[in-house]
Length: 345
Image 1 (cartoon, rainbow, N blue to C red):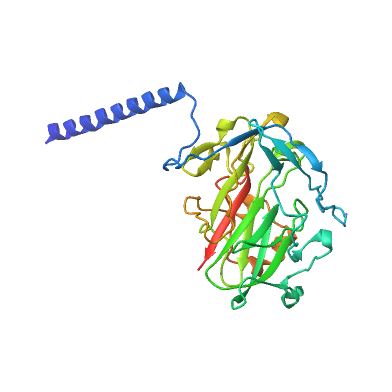
Image 2: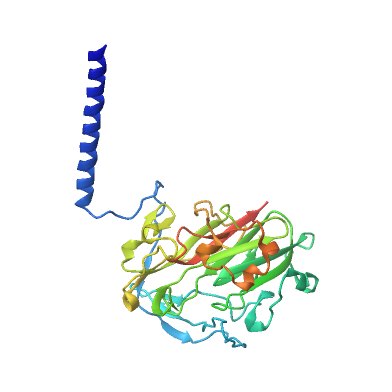
């Protein structure tokens, strides 16, 4: 019995030694080569996504789309620049994103300091005064509350309902009413605006070349709310030290190895030499019949991760956004242009 116990103990000890040795060998092997980006167990896209590379600052064509009519201390007012960036293959892109701001109706304000709309709470908002956009004459009226960090355009069943009234900052929020019947499709173009056109960078905390971050949140009176059931795909990714920082797994454009949120995200030092990866926005992406089945699910983020804590455009209306989640793609920092979709059944 004693010999049996001693033999068992010896076997356990030998196995432990072998396990430690194997672990040390693996660690030594890993130490000899730099770890690559994180990999996701997803199939390759079919066909492979077409990426277009741009590098450096774009040319500003409009210095400020809509100057803020109010200027008071603490408002965090920024200009809303638009311009053009040329890719290495000669393709021209509107920076930060092709948009309908100058021609589309502006969504009704829930809170907008630049328009002097600053209710203290939801009881001061008269929803009955809002216009109702008709999609289906025999549908139900749906009221929606929404905020983007920074800009968004709202489509219902392919119809452009309206656009964000403030492309950059100060942070604002919107409320909208529309008549529609189920099923219907919500499509949102969401954009993290930028000071450094083409590079996804902004002035922040004394750093003129700081990578921004983003987010979108919405809640509708029919119970629909932003969460991980929405689809979210990235189409502009920046700032990047190298184009290979974007790793494609299926239809995931992965930059999670760079850090997904501030302050964990790596701050690029390439400044005006940084790269951006751009993907062509598909035709018909706002339409109900568009196939988004291969798009990734949205990721949910906390208020603290988005950096919206204490912002009156959001925090003054907790009941308006109750049950909703801030959403974006896999990367809140580097994914700048994002398309969101949700079919309400």
